[in-house]
Image: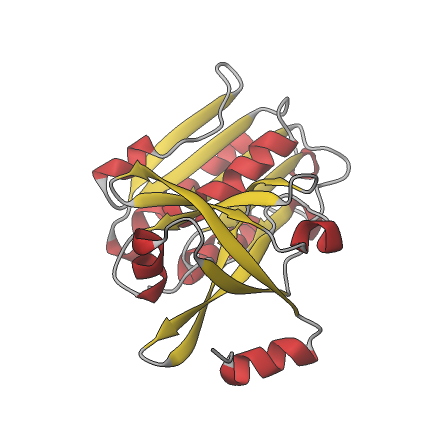
Length: 240
């Protein structure tokens, strides 16, 4: 399967193509499935960083369809990692539901970049949802001793069962039901974050939910909370 015009653009942007092979699968929750893969030499070639993601290519009625997924537990020595799929309607979820050992899928690495904040923050403020849990977990793993407050927007009861790599007495999780296209999450952050931030230069805010909500919260953090630009990382993970 070719990658169409998107593949051409990614090639021009020096995207690198690899083929992954499925080695196993696990149903994490009713709506989340983890697929284990070998990397086709990718990790040795690219290295790894927290929140690292790749573009997978799926067939959608004969046309190429790409979606981005965050690596879970990448192991450059073994050349393996997992991917977690939030299951809904669509070609990516259909592929994940049917994936069995030996299946292969094409992937492109382009656009993924992340550097841990320097100096290290006094406190992490992390905002996400089921789609960004793998990236959120990678941050908790990279900064295990940094206290964190986590707002997790939920759409389904099973979202409360998603495995968060939190530590007792170190990390606090606040579940916020998704309402009115992210309005409830925005209201919650506007209400609670100002009292928690403290010195803006000593905090770090990471936001990864739907594009509109992410943009609104990033503007709030920079304009109203006066967080310096390097202390806010915001990336919309999906569009409603």
